[in-house]
Image (cartoon, rainbow, N blue to C red; front, top):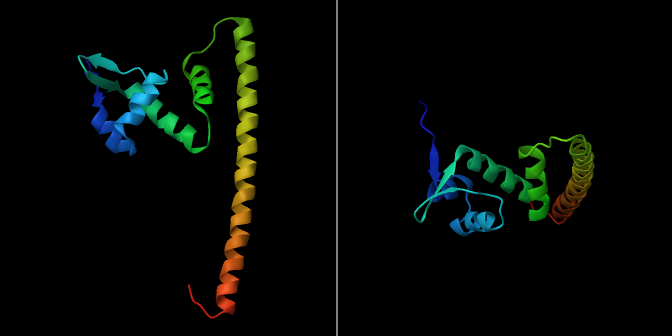
Length: 130
């Protein structure tokens, strides 16, 4: 029998560099459901993966509602034909949104590169080395 691995809230806050308050907030929002033993929260490997996905999603600017929708797409596959068609539509929409965000980020990175080059050129003009 394989022993199920659990993580304490302290282990996960250290691993992911977030506060206990953050993890409790995600739990209050329904994004995480750790097991409870008394007042102790025990996070499974599945919960650990969800935390990783939530934090990645937050870094790219998704709202909690969008993260919840994504979790539903990834972790609760539909079963009926209409649900499958709706899910496929949502997947396409999410991909389109993410592609647009990628284009926007690439464009902003290019603008930052130009701004940096301008600053470096000006510093060189006034004789300040970097």
